[in-house]
Length: 484
Image (tube, rainbow, N blue to C red; front, side):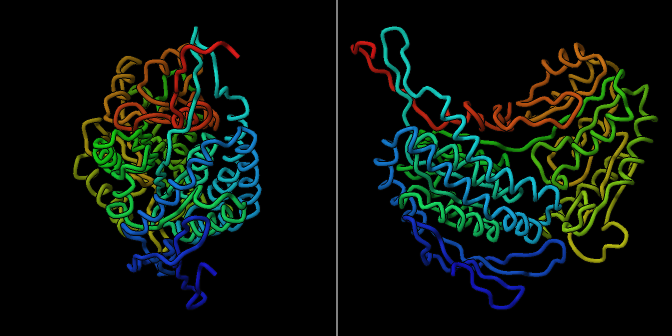
């Protein structure tokens, strides 16, 4: 057993996964795990230390020569086994997400399915990708970058472990993984599934640990060729600095303050509920959340009335209930952070249209936040500049399309944006001028094979599909050889 239960509600995750086996970590620190819906401590995870990180790196380095020489067919077969193994545990991943993270049933179910399907998508991408090509007189070989470190966040831990690992393996890399220590129960279920797929020892290794210990070692160690990180912009910058000495390749998917532009010809009756939904995705704990809603000043009263109605229908509570839209914040710290920003919004002169401080009515415990919408927001207010990471939305008025575009782009972030309009040519023209890695038009769209990542301080590089695969490859040019 890799998880031991000291009581029905108390689980200890006590092992790391190194060189194809569950092993006792050298580190001894215990980190508490909580159910955010009840605030109860539900377990602990034993954290690895620098020595555990070094053991994981060494195992991945030993496994690299053989893995890097595998054929496309061998990698596709590995990905198929991983997909089947993770798919078989999808219900357990879903339940762990609700229990440990407070994700709604709908979000947790979709996340678990996405985690398994990421291996299929990686296989499809690899199958179609030409690893060897002729360019003029040169032969160009796309080779694995080497040993990679994959660092995943608490707000979608299982999905990012699987999607990052799927891409790394499809490129022929070996991996060390540092998941969020706050997501240890999810990690354990995923890890048991990955182990069941029977990959060669050392191809992937997982160490639970702190970012400033295990993560820092991964980010600076000379045997790590690349770091792929999803999380906060502040930590992303520290990874970039730590990797500079060894010129590590990096993919960073960081924060966002995504604008939703509702143009004056939009169908407000459909656009406003979609804008609210985009802002409250994953209980607002999402880098892509559309937390700035830009509305034409001439239609502001109409928009705010529709928003108040839409938010009144948003259900907050037990994540296991199918009707729940918003679950709890992940931790007491995150709950307190969101409360501080709600108080700050009022202090800055914004006006509450919905929500406010405290828990929703009827919820006496749990880190639940009232879905909150502020009107009369200026784009220079702190609530409009900072990534709050909770269900708190800012409504900002604009005069015309040029003004809307200027406000939307006036941010250090650039991850995602949305445009709502009846005139699709106009929507396309506005979308083309927004500084964001993805722009959604008239809906909550997703294409998991298309590149995902940010402009500006929302990150470096892209994940998913062909662009994601190439981020784990290095081109080698051979000259003087005849075409094959």
